[in-house]
Length: 175
Image 1 (cartoon, helix red, strand yellow):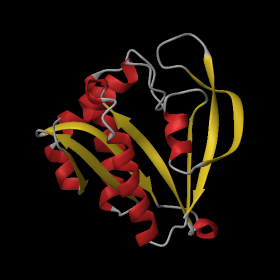
Image 2 (cartoon, one colour):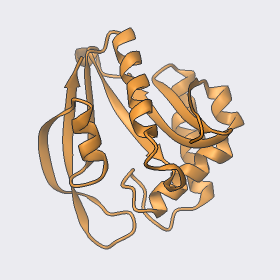
Image 3 (cartoon, rainbow, N blue to C red):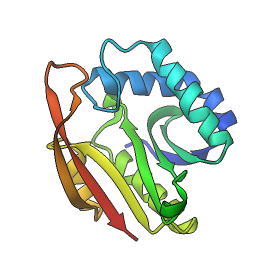
């Protein structure tokens, strides 16, 4: 099995790998991943997301970005959003845990989440929150990592490919 390398990336490093990040996001959306986008979802839209939303947040130190590489290819990514309001400086949020369908079932998501948790502890954010589609493959992963369910909201978001609405599960973990 190929070695998985996890790296924390700067805004400049995101620029260098922008096509890879756009491709992984596009693959996940078109595979049915509920990560805020609806098919059809173009490569240009994916690129714009990274450059218009994530790149500026990295420059302002509002987010931390990790990438998982296998043999030099981007296999997955996750972000830690730590730009919280003044009354929530003790918490952070998981954002866009994405693993390309080409690289799933290799422990990439788990490795990315371990790095995210280490960073949360390092920056003194002992409460981590996230949301995920109820019944998705991600939900048992988060539970196995020690996240607890805070609640479920029905019909929270439209499925990215199919014509229906999905419930979301809000989760948290206290470090």
